[in-house]
Length: 556
Image 1 (cartoon, rainbow, N blue to C red):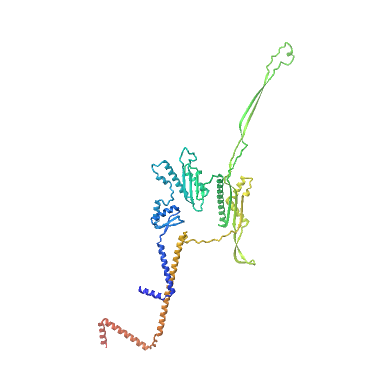
Image 2: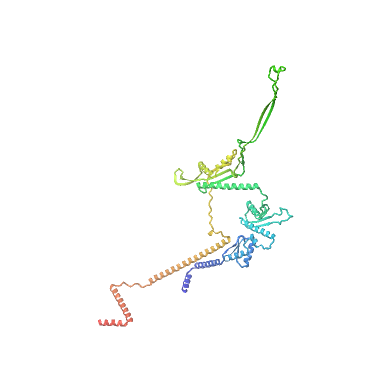
């Protein structure tokens, strides 16, 4: 450790003032970064406890949190409460048990708390309150409605009150989000839902209002309702036909290469047609009158001649007069012409007019580029050219057949023989270059999260601190590395200088040896080595040395 400290001290002593200042600033930045990281790690992670709360709910929940010494934060214009993640589920359970997370509207659970000895008046009032609570829950599910309040007034039956005053009434108060307005159909749905939930309540006795005032219509207008329904039907038919035509062109030309608009006029008039067939007749009544007329004829006086005139002659007996009879019979029959009635009702919502507008984008044609002399340069140019009349006609027929334009026109001409059908069924085709709006590339936020401004500022500061700390550490490391390399280079230069100085101060080398001198030097070296080995042997084992001496003496 002392050696390391000496090395650091020696390195620090060799540094310049600028390098020392840089290292000090880098260390300060690193300490600051460590402090920021420690502070961020020590801060609790907040999560949403409840959102979309009213001011009264926020005040009640905040009072409960203050009583329990729980840290919290308010967000979304003081309509949401954030608490530490470790306390989230415990606090939710506590608030749910205390019924603080609900908006205060209670439905049929009120009937579970009814007592055994309650009066019928109180039972009816509790039932109306339960129905009002259920209606409030349903109304809050409508898009744009934050809170709802329903009041039901049901007078007690009395012989001194007329029938109209004895009928129930209801009032609905809605609190909408900023910029949200309910449509007429939504208001009508609220009115009829309230009337259907309360027994004996008529829709005209329901009043609805929001923050801007009364929403209940003054009086029902059947013509306006019919016009609204007809307009919605026309818009739906136009959207359907436009989609079919656009899909047909997109299949041929590609997406974004054409635009189709279809305008439709629907006829909701109900017509009936009847006809009578005079070729069929039937006898309804037949009268027959018979008359009998009798006329008397006188008888004859005898045979014509003299006998009848001679006196005394026998005369024939006179015959009674003859009676003539005339009988006449007259029959009168009254016939009724056979009546065959055929009733034909026209289609309701029949297409009585249609206007189709087709817009085609200019087609791109590649042509070789030519110079001033008309010779090709080898380059290809793209040129926008409008479609020809034949191509426009073909696209027009394709679209009109897809939406049933010709069929609807023929039906209208057959049902209205004298009408100007051509003026109501029109179609146009135009070809021109579309305007291409430049596309702006919007970079998404980090991780694609839509953070709040407070979180964005916090994370930007945290990232900036981290960046500064990293840059400071990198500068310090680079300065220390440069200083270390400079020290190593200085030591290398000093060592090289010392070696050069030693070479300059060294004695001159001896002259080269002759072969005899070299042989003598080698013999001296061997002799010295032999002496050293003998001395070592004697020191290790004197007996061996004595034996060697005896052998030398014996040989000598």
